[in-house]
Image (tube, helix red, strand yellow):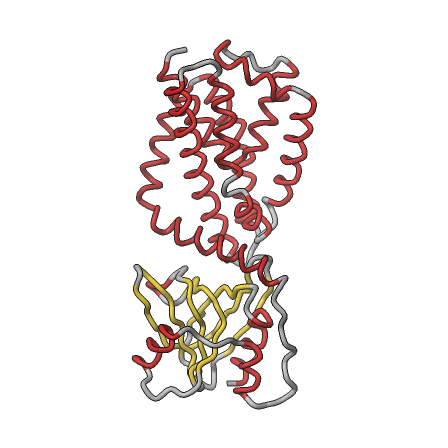
Length: 336
């Protein structure tokens, strides 16, 4: 096998491992164990995947991923945990397959496989996080099943026709470059969500006070805002006196601030979302008239807050380390 085919194989393997690392390693191991896969001598080092210890490890990871990938928000947490595992695993698979080659070729294999895995993992994680924001689970399960089917087909194509798989990878990379700003915004949101979920286990929250006083209730749900956010609110509402907030991300209804991370603030009795887009803070007021209503549903990485205002639904993801998870804020909005 020539150098071009080897590098194409590494790229294809990385692309698949970035989406289904355990499926790929298990399929290779079982296929080699049962003689279903006849590898080119170039890839003979991959025979180690057929050993019982690695088969057991791959099977365990496969079963856990198969279940986790079909549960909304659990799949996003799983993806967040594998942000580095999948690219590293892809690089190890590819460099093992490369066998005895020069250091320069080894480096190229590692970079291509790891880079391809990083991009495919990023695209998959971003897509699933966006789909999870929909209340129905069918699309989530459908995407998961699509990945289950695509992994073995892609593996066959990578082993049998590496140059064709490299062409498919090139098309994917071109599409990814176009969508990269959106993908990385969503990935940032996912990573922050995981970190704050972990932080929430160590943050004590106060019980909601039994009072009808709006400010007292909101102070139990919210937290003080940073100076730069307070300044931005005062640019919009110079006379504001009291500002409390929960950390959240806008996911629908605020146009240019979609997936922007920021603060959902109650400034006096007006709701304002302050988020960052292109390294610049923007403040968007949300009308709290007599018909405004809100609802809160709990998820693994985030709590989903929906505000019905001016005939439109505004959706936010509230971070888990927000005091009371934003639950009190939702109840305040219903009475504001």
